[in-house]
Image (cartoon, rainbow, N blue to C red):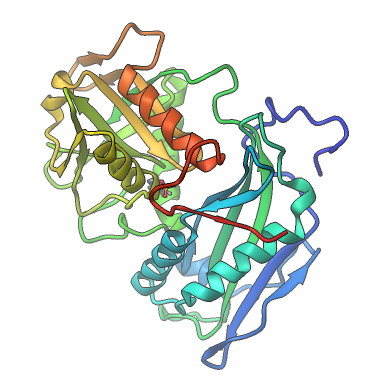
Length: 344
Ligand SMILES: *Cc1c(COP(=O)(O)O)cnc(C)c1O
């Protein structure tokens, strides 16, 4: 189903899948990447023994295109997403797409679907989903010879429908998402499959999402299912350093912004008990930028940590969120060179 562009309410549009006009594809065959293909087909033809289906030879990305105050459409740090999918490809032995191919495909898919890029003023964006999969049939455990890099887009509304609101989180004590030296540092679908049960159980108990501790010692904060974690202590931005978390581009950029605004940034192990010492805590990722947290519950240890007045986001999260999104929507200068304009 497509959104009806005449009647759509951009403000309440969910973060879900809607059809657009085109998607772009590039195949890796006989040791090289082919030409970029633009297609309106939503289906892919895939061999039933393809390695992506059986052995999880798969990686993906997520980024957005934003209509700015000046009407120009910008994409955010596309090179970082390109480098990250290269790391993912290297980790699960897939063909590595060149940064320039990745960038060209992102520009092409946005341009081809320009009528679906939400207008300025609603917080809505065009979400871009690149996907890299192993295509050739194998029964033995070995990497594919052929790969498909595909990108589709879908318009999404603002993450916070009724304003920027804090959520409750649960520590995941019964399940790990990723192991040290495993695949936690790369963006593979298997990590998400591993997190679904934990997330479903947390949601059933009324929590928005889970926070994982390090799988080895269960002493340090790792990250939240699909988002990184940070805490604020005075004028310091603290975020976990670990061998099993995904390097979030939002987190990296927030660290740069925080430093620019005079905060000190610490990337280090964050012991679980330190949750009691933060004035604010939050999740961060492309979808929401910052999701402030008002309560973290550890059902096993019987502990509860609360932040702020239980209703409103804290002042630091608010400042970072406001300044960060102002750069994305072209409302403020971009001193970091994070954005690039799509030539529509
Ligand atoms: C994608 C992802 C994030 C967020 O990364 P961004 O680049 O900020 O969108 C965080 N954690 C995990 C596990 C992820 O897959």
